[in-house]
Image (cartoon, rainbow, N blue to C red; front, top):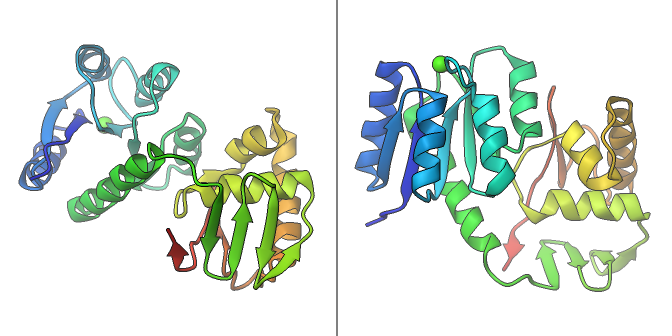
Amino acid sequence: MDTRRILLVEDEAQTRSVVQAYLDREGYWVTAVGDGAAALDAFEHRSYDAIVLDLNLPEVSGEEVCRRVRDVSDVPIIMLTAKGAEEERIAGLDLGADDYLVKPFSPRELVARLRALLRRAHAESEPQRSRVTYGPLEIDLAGHRVWLDGAEVDLTASEYKLLVTLSRYPGRVYSRMELVERVLGYDFEGYERAIDSHVKNLRAKLGDDPKEPRFIQTVFGVGYRFEAQAPTL
Ligand code: CA
């Protein structure tokens, strides 16, 4: 029985009750609220293992809730966004949301994503490993070295940082802007193209075919994610 506590923030009553029913059935302990102010209030008074957050909320917006939560906590956040609102999704990821679902979504998919996020959050709290292996790819985090099929790959500092950032949470989508901040360390829109160049170079060094990459996947219109090749834990 999973008694992890989920904060569900959704102003549409029907969506809220359907999602709540699914989460209840999974054995989660769910607090469901209908607006951003109630979400922040709930968050202040209790700790949660994850937050499912609608982006379009009356008064205090989902973005604002996300920002305020991120100021103080790394709790996993899944954003629920309107169909076609690509800008919103990117904004959500830039604000530090871990994942997003586009409405209308399947509650079963939400449950699956939530489960994955909680697993990831759990792995994150375990001691850092100094060497990670993803199939043919090996990264020595202490020595800052990378091998592919046993042969050392010569990466620039930015390429290495990009690889480590993406591969730390396989499957997590990173927006270009987020990668700019994490890899290049500054925050300026014009540098998003620089990330594309680094990805291109990194792919070339990892033998990734841009059309069918093994490791660095393009998330169209958003950014990139790392595909773990049979991770050895
Ligand atoms: Ca809404």
